Length: 160
Image (tube, rainbow, N blue to C red; front, side, top):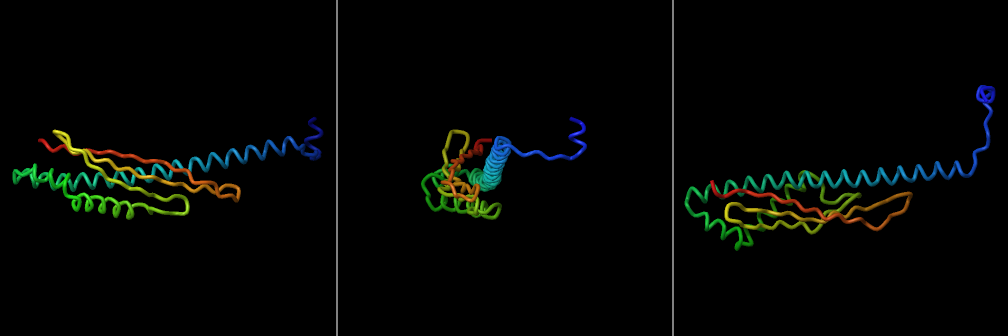
């Protein structure tokens, strides 16, 4: 056996070996594709979380100003009844997201971005939901998109 290895003789490769190598390559390609989808999803969540922090800072500034003027109830009414104020917060969120990451690329598209507010006795809770549709191109084929629903929540305490 040692003589065979030192003479550099080459043998024929069996079909079984070729299929095993092909299967390993396909498996690794799938794993890399899966990892890239997870990484994109993490990047989207991180950008959304940073924008939720900005929304929290804006709500903090608005509630602090309202508490100083002793009209926090008026602010809460604006938050829940004023669609213009909610639309402004939502637009700020989407614009901030666009600055951090593109909302549509060759790999994914973000859609149905929604920002909802819930009031509790001591805090304002906000929830962002969106759908990320990942386009999968593998082995020259375009597969149906995989949609991940992303939900993030944050809160701001209004009583000090």
